[in-house]
View (spheres, rainbow, N blue to C red):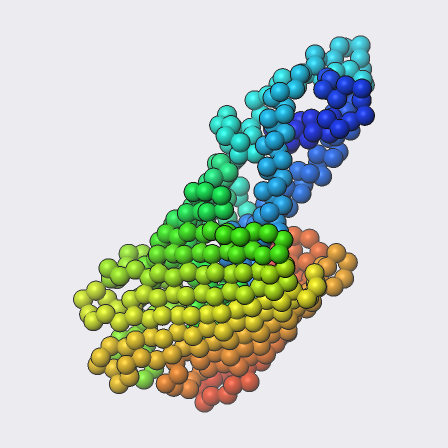
Length: 454
């Protein structure tokens, strides 16, 4: 409530500066105050929507790496906070009127705003008398999918859950942001500290920016959720790891935006199963960031993404590190990806990406190395009232070891229909794998899904 009242006051002062009254620097009247309450409610609701968009961006496939995922929302929110900072300074300089008398009836009487002078500031202007409070949000889904012979090996029709997140956001100042998945073993937790304008230091179990999709990817044509992935996926369900990183928006104009990220993390470990050499050392790609590193070497990488004229996006990502234990020979892997986005209209988007990984194997292995490759393409169209509906068509290929042909190889095509009228998102999708192998149990997947976010 104090935050709302503070914003009411600051916007009132801004409006009164351009009011047609004879003395724009005059006292604050009750009539003016009441007029602006309704306007401030809309302004406050818009801030809440923007903050929710930014919090949800890291959990939605259509977003870039959080927190730079929703560029438009981020810029609007920053502009709004900058304006509030300016208005706060004006408020301190404005004369305050005396409190209304009992006979004024609250109509044209003056309003005493001194009791709001100590209200918490959300502008990040350096006022330490009040700080933003931690915000808890919930994000979960419920799925009913048909996946005959899938990983569950059940009847092929089951209710299931892919995500159950309680999210904590805490912004004690404009230079510091903390967010996490509230859990004894969180999937991610991250501190973002602003070192300079548009330059942030990231610390914790940070998300790894690779490709346009975050946290998931769709190499192969299907979202890499382990519950529905037959065999392995190109990257973990949520690609995060313990370490540090930098995020820098080098250019930010209407015609050109350049976002860059760099990081130093523990990296992938050994523990996978070699499909060619039984019992041989092999990296594990199912998870990362689970604890202390298995070697002194640290994985490093980065991503750069350029957006031209708000229409064409081009990105490049790189990752490299040692995966073998410290007491065995040094074997490394490197990964390179490129992606592109074409925003034909405000409602029509095309996306595509390709990635390859070169994995060095121990000298005792029959092969010195192998390659993992993935690609995807997607077109989406929004329609209906307030763009509540969205239709997507996807396709992609995946080969996780070029030395063999097995159930990990995929050529998936599919479509998805979404409807988001409010906080709930409803969807239905169907996809088929056109790549047949003797050990593949299923090639069709149909899913009804509802996502709740509040």
